[in-house]
Image (tube, one colour):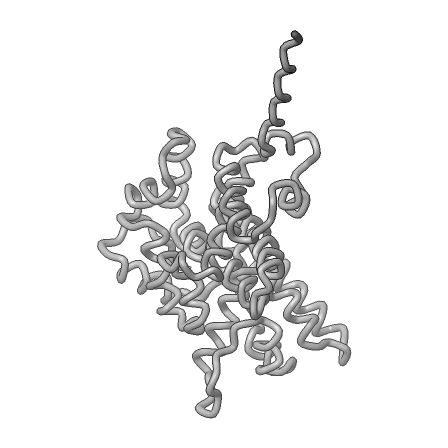
Length: 294
């Protein structure tokens, strides 16, 4: 796989470069598929989907494969992983995804980039878990769609770590040297475009289902489903810095409004450690002054 060494002149140039090379997946995913295939006839769609949904890269590969091989008789999008596997069938799935390249091999010569992408993938998984729970609280029409869309929310950053490791390290180093530098500004300084500016163009080029394209459009914040995904991604990104991250109080206020939960039940649902909860609770009301005695 050819890696980008220098910035490209336009968003479309990045889309072309990132679309030309096949996406690698996690080595754990390849090994899990091999183990399931060797296990015999008891493998079902649920077993395979559990492996796919743990890997944002494999999730992208599956959904784009289905869109590219869409049957003329198919009149609806497949937007969840278990439905996607059921649509393919177990044996055709194994055939289509044999001999997958791995992230670990692609970045063997770039260990810092490998650590970087694995951290982003872990964050994407955590965000997807939060988003699924938020969707359940909101009684969303299909929490699994929210889960998949949130898992893909960091797709551009993941792909940049894999396809342009040296450039992405420059972004990381700029933010490390200046903690107040916004991610989008650091990305524009290095790539000439932010991850958000690349995201919609990339997911359209990858032929993701139209519903997922809509759910990943951060400009549609009035849509509660889009808002759920964005807040889950923001919360996971800030939490990666620890429970003392200064952005977390604003995240919690936004989640209270979205989920219609008061602060203490929300903190419990999010698993905030007991010793950190006081930081996120309003100060106790002052006791009224005693009335003066006559």
